[in-house]
Amino acid sequence: MDIEDHLFKNIKFLKSPNFNERPNEENISLIVIHCISLPPKKYGGNYVEKFFLNKLRNSDNKYFESIKDLKVSSHLYVKRDGEIIQFVPFNKRAWHAGKSIFRGVPDCNDYSIGIELEGSEDDFFSKEQYSSLIIATKAIIERYPSTNKENIIGHSDISPGRKTDPGRFFEWNRYLESL
Image 1: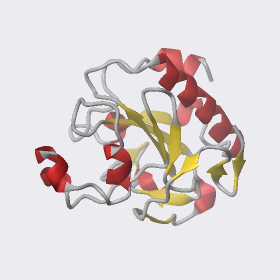
Image 2: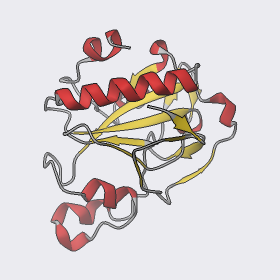
Image 3: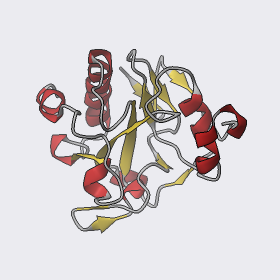
Image 4: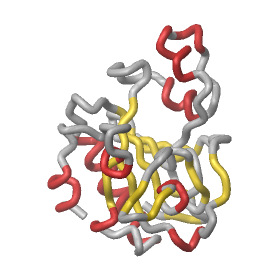
């Protein structure tokens, strides 16, 4: 995969309005792995895409009423079939980590790339997702060398007590050993 102008070439780009400028775009040094499904534990469809684009209709599911005021995005979203969708250019600050800290440095959104996997904290991820995640991560590390294997973390690790994703079924060894 090639990155040009901070976007993956040849994948779908849906520009989320939920981003802003990084304090220092040269400081991209962390990759944060998340998981999401909307409604919770339901896969398929395009509700996550709509959520990141602020186009989710509350009337489609009762759960959506509880998240209607959230403004969220990630740089990448990897669906169960391995499709990757980009929502925010890598040099911009996506809104994925919230209140967070990594190695004593707060506000991880300032210096991280967020990757959401379609899934749940208490479910397995597909082989297609691992394959796409590995390919995307290798390309990110090549383009942004400070995002090395040692600087890849789960959302639960930078927001302990507040977040639990990607969850206990995410195969960290499988992922990291393939990079």
